[in-house]
Image (cartoon, rainbow, N blue to C red; front, side):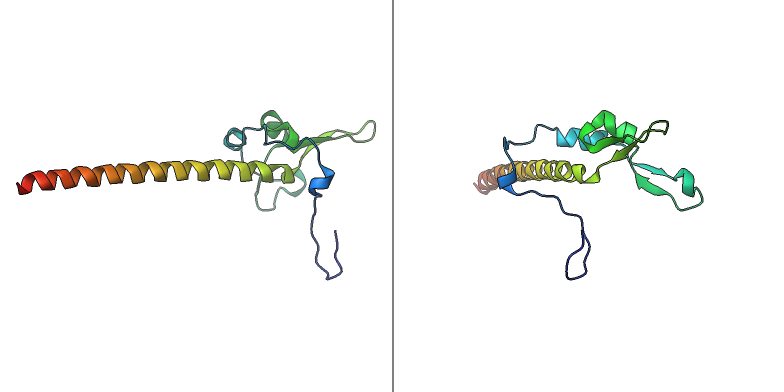
Length: 130
């Protein structure tokens, strides 16, 4: 996409008026993130170039099929798979949100334990003073 101010970018329609049946995700974001294998590799057409970091589509297909598409070439040509990286963004956000919630829960638990410890210490101090 090209804009009038000269910037380029990729945009995906996300307007609520274009959507129906909106619900919280059914995907196990943390499970997907934990199962995706990040690889270093070279493209066969550029083996002397620096290593690239990314995914192997066939491996990602096993973990998160929505992230992979099969490119159907002309008859007689080889079919291959491609990654749809934009599909990973909501999964990463959901995984981050769940981790933030876990951090919040642990902070609350820690604060309660600290308060409990403070109260016990005050009782011990009070008993030693008498």
